[in-house]
Image (cartoon, rainbow over all chains, first blue to last red; front, side, top):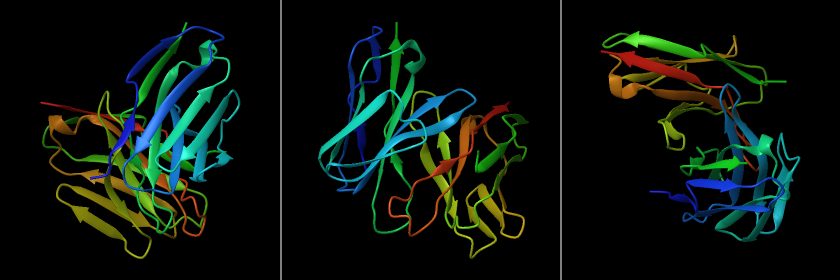
Length: 113
Length: 114
């Protein structure tokens, strides 16, 4: 089974802090994604990566950046955390070679105080 | 502009009843339509998926119906059980885009009451 592991289930940070969310997948997938999930808004794509060191903006990239130094690891960075970034963050991965379902981690619930 | 519209936002069904969730899409290039199920505290997990060359796909109590001309697809849960209580998301993606980005509906919270 594909396993997507997010390093923290819950995280509390302060306004202005730099925050790192980590995601690791074990299926050698080329594509990785970061979403945020908010009630009534569904899943919104922040950034995705289709290869090491490659990244593309999603629908809501403002205030975020990403890093992919190794194929299995995709990091989401909040450069200067703000209260409106309090949310559930979900990481997903999928192969690049056919239209297959994305596999999700269990999420990181981030609170910015 | 939302490309996948999902309804209803919430649904309450009696145990044993049929749960129906509907989605409509706009982009005719979409060719893969998965449904995800999400329990509290967990990430979304693939439930069932369909491609537009078939009009229906059934897996146990879960059925996807697909209407290409109307650009609509729906999830039917037969004999709904309390354990089916979860949030359901429809999604769509297209081949050839490389990244296979998914466009999600906003979700339906299903509650099955005993």
